[in-house]
Image 1: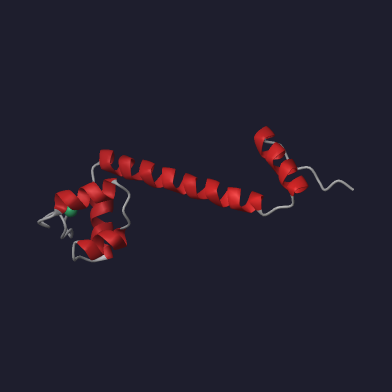
Image 2: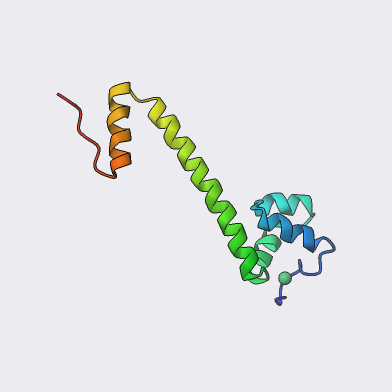
Amino acid sequence: MSRGCSLCHHPEIEEIRRELGEGKTYGRIARRYFCTREQVRYFAEHCMSEELKNQRFKVLRRRAEDQIVRAGRRIVKNLPPALSEDLLEALEGGGKPHGPHT
Ligand SMILES: [Zn+2]
């Protein structure tokens, strides 16, 4: 527990810990447990165990990766077929995209 933290004594702190570990946002947790976003952030930064921080980080990173992949697919889908094929080849090979064939 840290000085200045008002959440360690929250009656539902175990639920708050669980939701932080599941990657719920500070704002969503604050609304649900009738506290402020700043209180949740303070708790997350000062009172969460390293294990829980790592768990939250992993979940958030996986979610960000999924969003990036989905965004990439949407972009590629909207490209003209020939160009998107070049791009996919470049991405798979890790090389630079080919210029347009002229
Ligand atoms: Zn605390």
